[in-house]
Length: 239
Image (cartoon, rainbow, N blue to C red; front, side):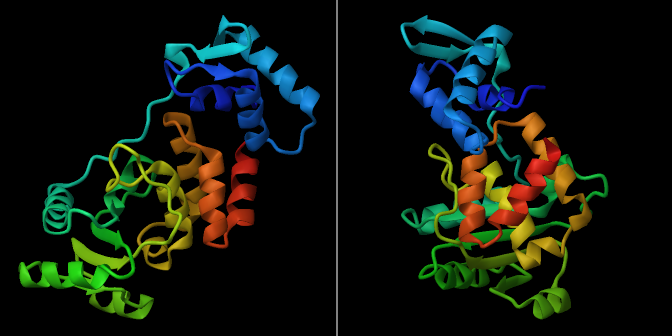
């Protein structure tokens, strides 16, 4: 598969792109090339049928070539928590991730679920208290790795702070995006302990083949978590 096909897959359906916008997207995907190579790649996208001209200097992706956006299928408990936090604190920013979501991509499945609620730093303690008072069992607040391993139980709920600049869904701000998940499962020491990290590269590969994933978002967030070079190298080895 030509390297520029991934850019085609990341284009939004029914959106018109200028040639310069396409070149910018291609440059983000492969920054080491010269301008002529990006212009050639646009021609390759046209020749392969991935995009079509809609006017002078305007292009649109063919509907069948667009990968779907990732939409996590949460457990009943995660949906319950999402609704409870949203109703009580409608204006705070938070994201829910649960480890069983990884089973879509893993060979060695996660048998016991762990739910992570990541919130703005000044609000996380209030959500922790809300869940305690509501009678939820096995709720931990920003545990160390030692305490996490010591007190963990199935369906454990971890309340912690969200890292700033984390990718968020515009339409569904509380569900985890694929870009955020791919960085968090590599960088977060608690999440890393819940699955076999040896499968990380395979998870990235399967995710990028199945869903629309924006590489620049991954790298920006990975840079915020001081792991950009490592994750960039892993993605490069998959090409």
